[in-house]
Each structure stands twice: as structure tokens, then as C-alpha cells.
Length: 126
Image (cartoon, rainbow, N blue to C red):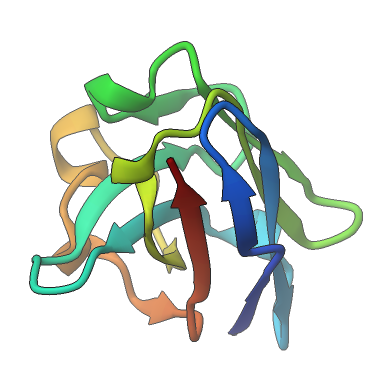
């Protein structure tokens, strides 16, 4: 499967962005999906994940209440709605596909994901 992330940009603190991750080559419904981010000089970190059916979601603590992950399997697309953005949310955001639904612990591990998109830059100004 090929993944194409989009929707990044420059936004002021407190603003919102919606990221999209379009899958091609195979139905995204076959994969659990995750969003990760990498800030300059830092390791790539987990942000959110969603099960294949969309029935279960996972978030890093800092994203709870601000970000919402969702999916539209008919459109082979996963979304990350980001509200109340902070300057520390500035990073390149990557979507990733996992062939298996898994536990909360494993869904947060980037090594569990089999396919990655190219990333989209989110910059939050103060």
C-alpha cells in the first residue's frame, strides 16, 4: 500500500488543521492506521492510531481532547483533526499502516507499522 499525507501548513497557536492520509494500492480497511510526528532534532513519536474498523482509537496524552483520528474506508482515507494547536505541535507528521490491529501498547510503537507516507509539515506559530 502507498500512503500520501497532506493538509499540513502554517497556523497560529490555537488554530486548527486537518491532515489526510490517502491510501492506494490496497484498501486502507485492511490496515490499522497511525499518525506519528517528528520535530527537528527529536525522535519520531506516536500521536494517534485507529483500528481497522475505526471502532478503537488511541492517543498520546497530550493529544487527548485536542486531536481526533478518524477514517473513511470507502475513501481509503484516514484523517487527523487537530484543534487548539500549540507551538510544540510543530513537526513533520507521518501516517503509517499496520497490517494488524493490536493492543494499545503495540499500536504506539513505530516498529509495528509496515508502511509509511512521506510526511506533511505542520508549523504552529506563537
